[in-house]
Image (cartoon, rainbow, N blue to C red):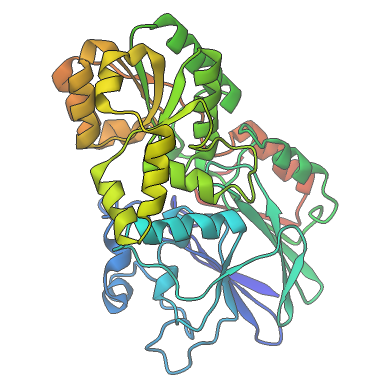
Amino acid sequence: MNYQIHRGQHEIGGMCIEVNASDGTRILLDLGMPLVAPDGGDFPFDTPRRPTAELLSEGVLRDIPGLYPHDPGAPDIAATILTHSHLDHYGLAHHAHPEIPVYGSEGTLAILEVGRIFFPDSALPADLRRLPSNKPFEFVSISVTAIPVDHAAPDSRALLVEADGQRLLYTGDLRAHGRTGFRFENMLTDQRLHGVDWLLVEGTTLGSSGGTHGLSSESDVENELVKLARDSKGSLVAVVASGQNVDRLVSCFRAARRSERLLVIDPYQAYVLMKLTPPSKSIPQFTWDDVRVSFSPYQVQRLKDAGMMDLVYEMSRQSRVSSDELATRPGRYLMCSRSSLGMTKVFDKIGPDRVELVWSMWSGYWERDRCAMRTWAERSGVVPHVIHGGGHAWPEDLKRLTSAIAAKETVWVHTDAVSAL
């Protein structure tokens, strides 16, 4: 067995790793969109929708024989296997030949299917299949075991690949400080992983893009939100976070209950939580007594276009909260907010002096992006609270991982660090 890192070794994102067995069987581990453009800026979000030929000519897509529809030798890849549902790991997978199946965990596939409804212009692979959890799955002569890991994306996986008597472990993105941090600890004692021939491990926090250490755990995030909510009883606590970050949604729900508030989510977040119920049965739902839904016209239209107005009516009947209600009693609510123009209009209706704005994502996004929320905050004289725990393992945890695995060779990926630990 051998492997080739087509992209993602000396950058954050754009992950694409090929593994080959001696009989010619080939698989890909991730096929993601790059995040950092050659000029140092962000890749445009419309990059995945651009023609395959253009992306190949610019080097955004790597020229991998047997992968693309125009290649007379394609398809010559047995499968593409995704570690999780972030664009930098799956965002270009649809450019591959449509007969190449794309595998992911139950939660990963759920998030991609949610995208079909709320982001109809997005492109997804034609043949999505579920990868069994934590047991070997055969791709001709290559065996892949999807190992649950803790990460900000739901139901993320590391991939143990075995062929020709050799083993390769690709961690994908992972951390030890989320709500399922026990999964990281499990990896340290998992005998299947010890002494692998190759450990391909993400090192996001080792480089300049890793940001600061931040809060040490998701529980710390929850506790900080509770303190803020209790200290600002007459104000709405609005937490701007990714709608796919289930750990953060759970932290917001728990913080709301502990501070005697109601959690407010939008239809997208409600649908994400609903679709993730099978792999995560204890996460909050819009049907719960302590949860309310604030409706976004855009999101309602997406559900309508998908023929899902019955779900909209159910959300409205059980859980709807209006902007008038938010403005009348802002101190009753803790909201999982979006960085959107529509949300800033709601905040103006409430009154900026009665909104405690929380930025609960990487601080670099706030600093680099002139988003609607930052524009509103600066115009309104609102200074956001930064309450965030990172989605990637801290250096001390990476050191524990590499030491426990004790691979014959360790290769750092998903990092712009000049040197490793």
